[in-house]
Image (cartoon, rainbow, N blue to C red; front, side, top):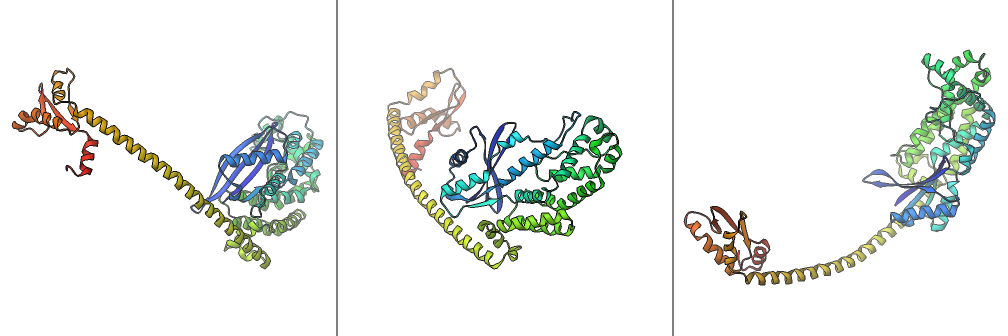
Length: 449
């Protein structure tokens, strides 16, 4: 069985749908990309479902082989658009920004208006498959980002002001000064890239003294002490989430490892004990209750000896029930494979019949060749004396007339100490060979050794 992951993105007016699968081979998690399909029609659930099912068919993947479908949370796209709209209204920059904005290039609202809520497509797929085995798994890294968004939704004003300052710091006139002072380059966040807002605020905090020195001549760099305090609180509160997000993007990650990163992030964030950290923890607890309703996730934690103690009794029972259902599905797939093997064996029998026909045709052909060889005489070999092309060896079948001719040719050479079936023509030593098919045929018939 395999796990399917679907994700979509839109950049520069081009929409792409990515499909990945995960499976276990020799105890190792394998990740393979089935395809990255460009979406050229309106992003309806029906159209996307058609693309996904077509891709699965290309690889002969049946829906019964799919164990889970992992997607992003659709609501995150709406929040991202709102954040971009608010930041666009507040962020104004009178100077030209540098062209090299690294990986922090902003995404326009127009591009994200084309972004689809991929979760709806996954739900539609589950409905069309009509099975209770396939589980819809929400991306934990994406869910953690939603918790961060929940904590920051009332801090949009200070974040927008910080973003405006970061943009100002990246203008050519100020960036030259930063480089001369060997300070770290400011970052402008991209709301669709996880923990990029934390990176922006963290870098701005490092440049706090520089901003204060430049504020008298550049009003965009002026932030009140209370705003700097908020920025520092946000940075400290989001650091555990930043670390967890990186871990949750690892390729070799089991469900137990995933839950471990989540719980560790929650514990470390609660230790910080400020307003932002409390909001993050509360949001994580709220969303965790929904995540733990997933049977596939509970089964993964239940099977992990390190973390199964974190589950409640009813969660363990639900995990066991899920595993029983999966076992029945695996047995069904195995039966299907056996049936396919039987069909393949019948196909092999037809191939065997074809092979037997080939054998018959070859035997008839060999008889024709043998008969034609019997019509030849030993003089055919002796005629090599008149050929101008140097001869290294001669070859014939084991017909009696051919063997007699070769013996006559090699008689003189044998009397002089030469070997059998070796003769001399114009001073050239000629070795006579009998063709292998005839030797093999006679040996297996037992007529000659």
